[in-house]
Image 1 (tube, rainbow, N blue to C red):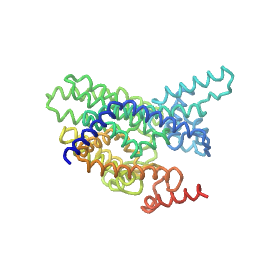
Image 2: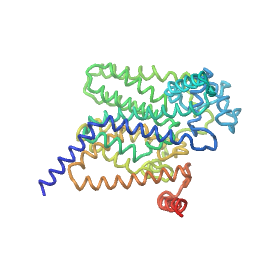
Image 3: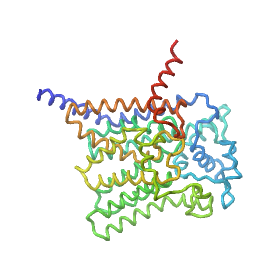
Image 4: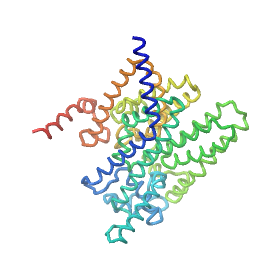
Length: 454
């Protein structure tokens, strides 16, 4: 019995080694399948005739206005992309048309939008009649593919980070988090949202920070600050994750002057990028410190009464209710303590801090959302936690089988959730009952079978 289990452990270790050796190919395959899956949906009929939607309209308005009109006056973009919008009610104190969303996603999209523009111009030169006004499917497809590219790069960076925690479970953990959370949904089905760009920026910051911990000189911390500025440029709440490398510096054993130098470099790097958003605020709202979210006073934070339980466990997009696997990922952070107590504490603080921030926001339910979409910037933390947990269970055959069984069930749960959400069996706004989100999955399957079976 002992020999057999040892043999199985050896074979299992060999399989993990093979997977890790081909990790780059696996992640590339994930990217290709995601891109092809998105492209396969492009010909499907849409009532509004657009590939982008929801918040994506506002990010797209930025990139189209910047490249085609060379300004940030969105009145004409809104008239085309969202005709029902009353533009007059969206005037800011400077007389501009408001856009409360961050500019970073649009800036990351610019190379892809430009490529689509050049392609459209080239097709016209060879006889095709293609619109070059920046609104067509070529442009919209390009920016969506851009998001998928950034999501893939972010996962490559996250995988490299995770290998330092658990080398032989890193790729398995990355793929599991992709498949068992809302990551796959926003990667393929709604790439016009900011979340893949947000994930890319946070993964870049985590990668540079954790890699910079090994350096003796303070230079890398300027680059960490640049990545942090990009995080804030894509989604301002993500910028609070910059506190993690700052606290890491404060907890280190380096001298006071060295700590101060590193923190200053982070701050300088952050401002070197984030000033772009501050300039946009100044032009649109009249102040470099006034976000569009706070113009009319209807949105804000309730720091003393956060909806902590709701954000994590409610039917209104509660993170662990919609994606229970991420609870295992968070549990895995406890296992990181054995390797690096400071890192484990910082990762836990990052998750708890973001939870408190989201729970304190007036729109803590996150609007029309597939699960807790505001948590996607924390995917590097979830992957690290998953890898650490897998590292604990891999030594026992029974543990592996139990965990694999749970993962398979949660994969089914996630797939059914995606179908419910996408096919309209549940409300995307979050006003659903426990029964609709649980037993409703079985009822949906029955309804779909009745449609296809004679």
